[in-house]
Image: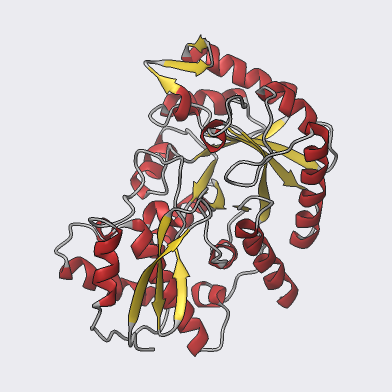
Amino acid sequence: MFIKEARARVIKDSRNEETIEVSVNGCAASSPSGKSRGKYETKSYYKNLRFNIGFLNSWKKWIEINDFNDLEIIESYIKNKLKLDDVKDFGANALFAFESAILKALAKENKKQLWQIVNPYAKKFPVPVGNAVGGGLHSAKFKKHPIFQEFLLIPKEKTFEKNYKLMKEVYDKIGRLLKAKDVNDEGAWHTELDDEAVLKILSEFNNIEIGIDVAASSFYKNELYSYGKLKRTEEAHISHLVSLIKNYNVFYVEDPVDEEDFSGFNEVKKKCRESLIVGDDLTATHVDRLEKAIKERAINGIIIKPNQNGSLLELRKIIELCKKHDIKTIMSHRSGETLDNALADYAFAFQCDYIKCGIATKWREVKLKRMIEIERRI
């Protein structure tokens, strides 16, 4: 397949903020944008959104792409054209949307599914992880909310479709129990209850494992963790967190301490051996951060956000490294989502263990329904 034309434009994400959509040979792909951003994730654009759009709209280079590995040709061309030290300097949102559009066009030309272009031998389906109750930065518009950013549902049925249905049922029941009237920017229920009260409600459901995204960096300042008026030292914070994890049998724990604190992650991991200790802000979907986390034995799970990195080739490298070291992979959306459903194809193609893309709102359900479509086809 030859890239005959590239077109880019501004679209609005689920938070009504600007992001990029790129079309290649008539096939469109878009990039989400995050609100809770790790310090180490790739910047979104080279200079700004308009520069990247102008660059792609002036694309005149006919490049032949025949398989996933040929993305290296694209990356080399961009790197040389703009004299970049690293192709990711082009900007993660722009690079990811462009590469994704290329793969979609290649799939269309070859009459294949997107996931088949990446990995035609994929068989295992990921387990959905859904954000049921919100807090932290995602609920900043509310005066009172839990400290932790997300309270998650991880269903334990045998198929993806059954997991999706169970997750939806429990999500609706939680809304009724909370008497919730509002949702946050990810569609998670808003409540004024504290962290422990929310965990107590979630622990009452069968066939569901509990997860939390602590997003600890968002309330860490001057070597203290701020729980409203209460300030906790690292030792006190970890002690409190470990107590909640054990008391409520929390299986999934994302970003339990600050994004610079590899030893803190290691401590939580050692004290909660039955739990998945997941790096997001810590690792920021970058190889060097993952390698350090492996060396420090900081995590046994990692969030994979394509637009934290930009390069789908590097994404594959990260996932292969995780499998080598028995680290569970969680392909994840962002808080500002688009209606692009390719995240499901990538989660399946890369054989991720989990896919985290919410429960409610059309922006998230489109990914879940795409995964069900893949499952039914197979």
